[in-house]
Image (cartoon, rainbow, N blue to C red; front, side):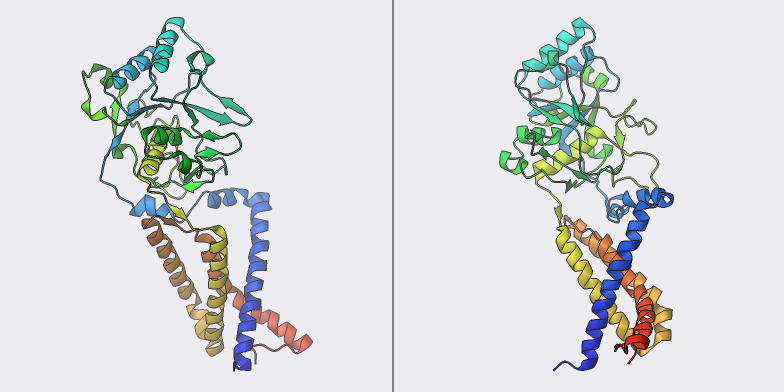
Length: 388
């Protein structure tokens, strides 16, 4: 039989958990809707604890040899056409062009570029969604049935840091640029590509140093490049000159940024983000995302049992509880964060924030719950584990 004391402990733990949920919900609403706090909300909204893994703990000294990137810099269309022709002579498995030729320019150079784009069947071109419109290549450059994909990475939020990507838009039945390339290379099946309609975490392989790159000028001068045979070749912008830290054109924030809080300088070019996604798709090295329902249930369970532990401690010695509570919260925070980083290391993503917030905040709420109990006891003779 469960004693009355234990029943009261369970009831108090449950009610304190409810109080924690209500108060934290109210604080969240105030934090989100109060204009004065808007800059702070945006700063925290763009921060993820798991960024620490990529920013500080992740190290990759390998160089991928299956994906090669050509830096087009500010080259004209004639030089780009020459470079595509040069690459095709090396017999790559697929060529992706992360550049959009939306307008006609010079008739002569346009016709040469069009000829090259129409000549080969292994070229994947790109376009992007801009609000309600699509920005794509001019019809002059398009084939009757082009192989193309959108270069937008994520449609679900406006976060500056690129953590997730969407590979398939269900309503339009459209595939992303990276997904099309992975399909064309044979590293991804048509069936699996249709599962990419929800945002999934990008398993980053590395930045500029992790991939083999060529300057477009350097490429033109080479007679042959055996390393390109049966490889994925991407044409895109990598700065002028290549890797210029002050050139932020088509550059984005990613978890690999060494400054994971208060970021100021983007760290990765768009074509490199696509290269990382293609690497993940072709290798099948996906990050499994723990469902949000499971996360919030786990957060509630952790909050409940942490509060129960805190109440038992509080009952034994209020003074010791007040002195050691901060240390206990620190230990819990470090443990949960370490757990999330360990899971990420084995390609499992856990959204640890709600677990961390509810668990730590629940311990703080015990003192406020005691004040509420004092009021209830005076008015309604309320029984409680903490007061009786």
